[in-house]
Length: 252
Image 1 (tube, one colour):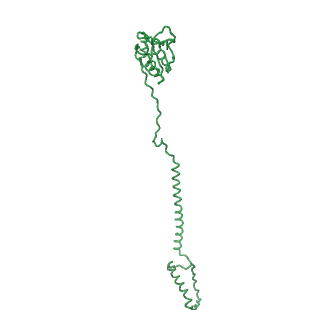
Image 2 (tube, one colour):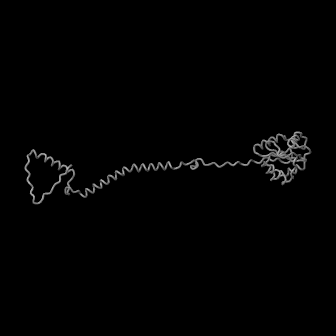
Image 3 (tube, one colour):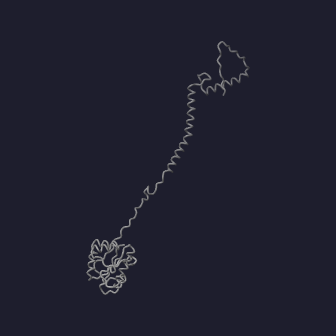
């Protein structure tokens, strides 16, 4: 709307009386005055000179205008900030390593299995059982040796043999018995009687023949192969030191 600027009347200047306009010509001016009065009532009265801005109104308007872009900027910046926060949280979530099974404790690492040492093999007592099936005992010892990796020791002797009794006393000593139990399956075979089967076994594992000096100690691996034969090499000293040294030498 175009505002009309009112010019003050200069001193000494007499306004010219306007000529009276016809009634019909005055109606538009009356209507214009009514419209102007309505606009003034809507906008409110002003005590300031026309053409000069009110400090209070101008300041308030300026502050209002300044606040409006800020609010708008805040409103516009808010989605960006929320999007940035969401993106940051998503990045942190994706960057954080997925906990492994070991970290969460759901599947703790199992300790390495340590194979327990096999139980000591049975060491027969002193003497020779003439009624035992020597071949069956040898077969069982060879099968056990294949299973546990031990070696088979065949002891050919007789119950009336003094050297065999001396060897039995050493076999019963704790240190020697521990070596036997850890490394050997001992089979004692009676060759002092009339068992032809046992005599055949002696010739099988000690084939050199001749006169045998008892006890005859033959070390055999799990496949039945002879590793040493004291009938061919000579008996060790029938003491703890001699027999222990012999057993350690031929242990598996």
